[in-house]
Length: 124
Length: 503
Image 1 (cartoon, rainbow over the protein chains, first blue to last red):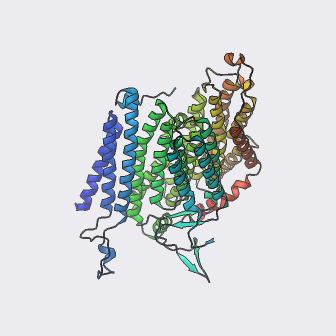
Image 2: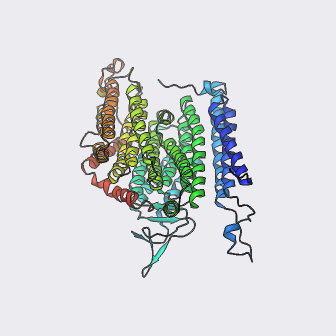
Image 3: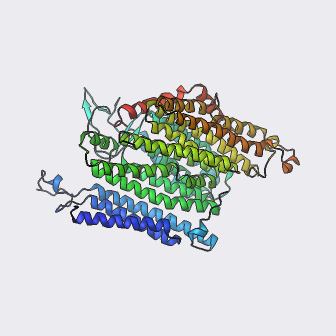
């Protein structure tokens, strides 16, 4: 039986966000809704990455003067997860901006936000 | 292999120069001559750097493990935790990045001539695409790999959208939506690998997997392998994501597709080798990679055979030949990896030759549909010769380069006791010839009513002519003297097979 710690709950919430985001991106027909679903997916990934660095009863990973060097590695939260999140936020914003720009251009061209109409294939 | 512990000077330059060029040409925006001068000069500098650079590392954090033998030297073969985000420039990186720099030089020269206005941002995207591919080739840590792949995906979308037209914008939108999915998958893979091993450095992560007891961790390993493979499939345009990538290749200007397909091939090589180094010993991992590769080859070539437009044919052939690259890597043997890497080098060269020929068909005001065109051989005989030579190289006909790499791949498949894979590779070669010759006959050789009326010959622009001659020369030289390229590739293949933790 998996113990329901704060970290487990956090991972579950992240998984839920990722699933909702993925489903929205794949199945919703409105391009703006697809974009919103992408932001949910991105948030889910960020939450998973932050949760990875969580240490029960841990401390901020900054070595204060007088702190015990032997205890620090065990108590400090892992810093790499939040570091990746910062990058992922930047990438997420860039992707959102590009998607939004393309949606605006295509809306002006086709007059609709329906993916089924806008993205209709021209393949022979 | 001892290397100095100082950071290598060329690695930051290969990253910074494209960024600075992108900023400058963006600011120049519409000043055609200035943009042309700056971009050609930058591309030439990048080519020189990639050719003359020594081999070595660039460390961003942490430090290399050093040994003291009179002087402090870094020995990649001696075990030590590196704890650093690092880039590596070796023989494999040198040949791949040099080829890409050579293509960039001519692509920039051609595009700054053919585009009429406001092409500063477009050229900037071209340089940034180069940057992302160079970074993907050089990284030896998951963090930078993830960033480079993400940036690369966005740049592909940007470059396609900048090619204009509704079809290009639609292709860019579809590609960006899926890039969001695969990018998130790669981030999750990174998080899982960090969770299992504790290291972002690929060398450290492989060492950690070797040293630590992983019983009970296999499910997490497989999930991280699956997410990493998803990004491999996506970034390289392998099946079943191939319609998105072929759409991208078809929608961009053919000269932009030269850079796009080069970026894809380099990404396939880089991520493929990481997959093999990290998960190669995992049961069924190589089999999964091989299945995707065979599927890509077969679907790509079947789709190419049924197309009725030269651009679509080339788009699907690029996809199909991506499968040739990955099939070699997936075999995981020394010969297989050498074949896959050599195929990647050859592929970008002969596909570039065909793409530039396709660009010239459009430049002469002709359509690329094989239903309504014809008679171009009379008006452009030189272009006809080039496109036939490109077809022979792509079809693996001796003495061109495609023959050598496909022969190595077939030998590798037979060595592994997989004659059916060898048969598929042969089938791809033959079908490539059929698909391309069908287009060549319809566009160039078949009598065309409209074109018969004129007798004036089309003249190839000077830069394009030089580019085409150079590409044909390279396909011939590598076909006759394959050792010129193989000397760069064998060391990398040996390392992947015998010491996978060494970048």
